[in-house]
Image (cartoon, rainbow, N blue to C red; front, side):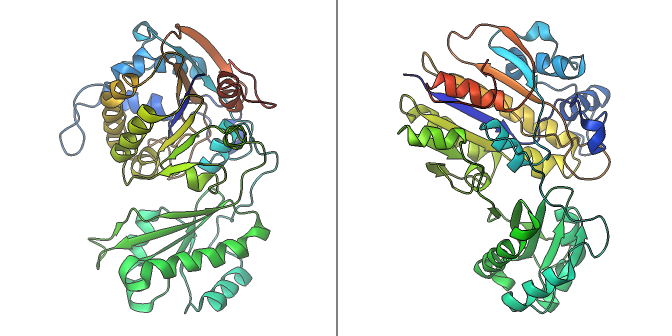
Length: 404
């Protein structure tokens, strides 16, 4: 029997989504624009970024081919001549959202048919009855924010007032999300979690995908910092995910990073968490080393999205890709004969694009392992083709997507 490993580089889009215009994202291209900015810039603001994007191992797995399939061109440094192993292509999303929850569910063979609910781009953006109920049930003196915002910016703006008043900071984005930021020490982490649990109950009727606790520390706007104790409160995924099928078949399932939160801990098996890409990759390599035959390892590296995509930090995103690339040989060294590994994304978050929201893009599909020859996958019609390929590889039933 064989094993399967899926690694999601959160927000690594490769442009070219066929319906990007409907989302206001026509022309967005996370990886392409990062590579272009690197090629045109001698150094970043700190003076430490020199030369083009340098990801030789990802290039050897066909990352340039993924870009070519999605947009018709491979960025500088990712030319397809560098591709010498594995199957590579891109995939478009059929689900109506462009968030991590939706993207991961579709990868796992459970695409959404009905869209989430969203909050309008007006201020205040939350329904009055929602905030009144939340304040009453959670015994809050009120809330701050109540609008669309970048998480780091709104904490900087309202953090000091939060410390004075005890009012949590509530905000949203283009995603179906209700985020609550509060000081980890002064407001209390467990109290923040309880407020989020109440909000989750209240938001079910609005079809909001996730409530996210965003604890932070610091005493002034100059030193506020979000901590690693973020917690997501989602809704359960649709039935029939790849994880559920693997669990029903008695297979070992290991979930690394925020996979557990994204699937509401439904059939996510042994969960391993990390406060950074580096630590998540440590867990991924160690889990790959020990994963049983027939097992499924599902990993998410979120820093690409939260630290660099949303913050529009092109050079930071490039550096994070290069750091991941440098460690890829550790994963390759732990693959066994018959293993299938797939590196992909879940949506885009183009750091050169206006605003701070996700972007509707195709995602890369890089399938590799011992004995997997170089060939193109073309552009797949759905992320679910990834789950279909893994299901076939692990001899699990599948009804959604076409295996490659």
